[in-house]
Image: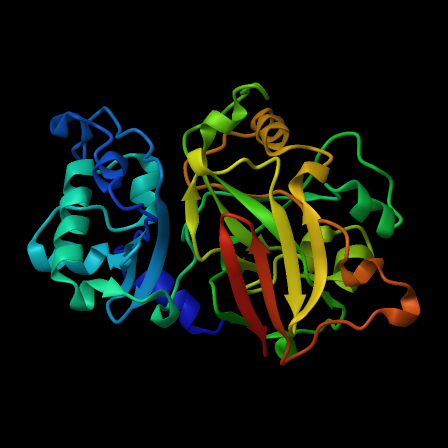
Length: 344
């Protein structure tokens, strides 16, 4: 992502939830709590996780704004809340935490949809931010597809291999990664399913783990292989500026089976990766349960679940053509969407 990324992450607390509301189900999706007082901000009782919705963060003239995806376009909740003086949530972080008034969100979406115009943003004209902007943790899993471990000539792990990225790695749909400014040159792609934690999880069982996931998005664990592998410090080749694009959609967990999703990577229109999450060594539930044994997972935390075979590192040495400035990458996951970014 360019240097404006840090500016828009700091410029405002207003965010747009792009909620994928299906026709006729907006009321059900947005009014989960029948008791407005219980759902009100500041209440000790949090609003239950929404269902059948798709959210995003829009990057508009006034900063980030919550967006809800509908069949008429993306509702700019931040703009609608300000215009109609509604105390609606303004970020995906508000929604994930449950600290918001569901009735106010529904009112904002309804009014914005009815008014149209500047409150509805066409998807092909939208500018996006990362679907979460300030996670306490960004956790990644290495070698989580058997075929990927084999192509990298590495042993199949007996438990999840965890490493991390930092918030400075967050990037957005249609963002850029400035590889020309980096010292390395062995740049590689890794499309991944990303789980967003929805409530505090510590020592949870694998059977219960998915209850702690708010939703899923598309992620890309952009990597530089020389820095990653030369001395065992994976982090150095994993957490460069903007090396963690996520988005553009945050799809609520009730709509997704994380154990059966097709993933693909295209580089300049050429397909490079094509796999299914059912080939994971460790399921999303296993990863969440495992990580929660060693740290408290908090609402908004980001978990990259690993990449399948087809990465450049797995090619024979004489066929390894690393990514370079000008390349355009598309990461796609069925039922979630496509994440685009360009190298500069």
